[in-house]
Image 1 (cartoon, rainbow, N blue to C red):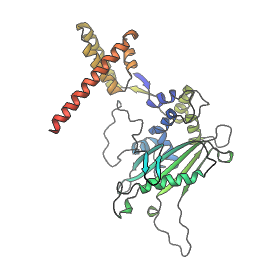
Image 2: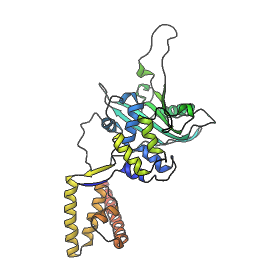
Image 3: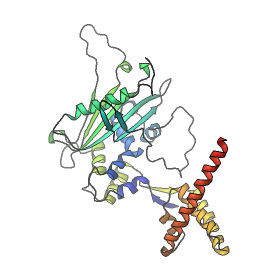
Image 4: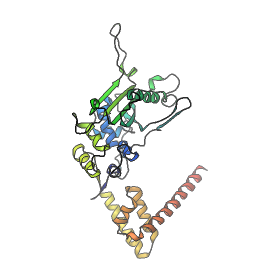
Length: 334
């Protein structure tokens, strides 16, 4: 079996030496393996499900019969919803991560929207909770004419706004706190069904590091992931050994078969001097298996001195394929 790094591992390796909330570090939070673990601890609707099931719910459709996943397909990261919210009166808000989950229900699927925000430190000029409530409220308001129309307020999706604070004040370190609307009987003992008012929940995850109590579970995992006190390889090892987060994946029999076939095509191409066959084979491996150019070059023992030339040929092939697809699309439209 051939093994390669998962996209998760590659992203961790790319954060080596960078600040905790550098853009490349923020990308780590967009992986389904991470989001599923955050959701399991912070989203009540999925707390009883396994991590694997929650990963399926993220941007998924649990009501449809699922086909077996093609292991060559990259489903490690979310696609996400539009994170830019522009309003002529209120200005612009850019969310870090915004996505939806579809969870099986007794009759219909339950949909919730998750907003994940990461902060280097707890702000001193304003209460972070008020900002979180503002973000969550805007996401609810923006559902008008997208999730529901006219007066169909019953279609509003619940919003979770989850705030991860890397360097929290001492009293907040290594804590997870949820804030949600709760009924309080003023006269009598009636309360409406929860689904009628439970539309916004704010969660703070305040990290503190190993020097503080409660350094366990989700807070430890996130601290290992986003802080720079560990080397990238140590992060990968801890996340894989302690949290069962996949850092390598095996390319199974279908890929082995494809590799053998590709090797045969390459050898045949070299014998008859056909570079086009070599380039097409390399391009398909990159496209279907998610391998980089260098990984494929190394696998087929292409000399390093030839890499730049092969890269140029791949670029030309890609442009030709794109032009052909566009032409075919226009022909179909006619």
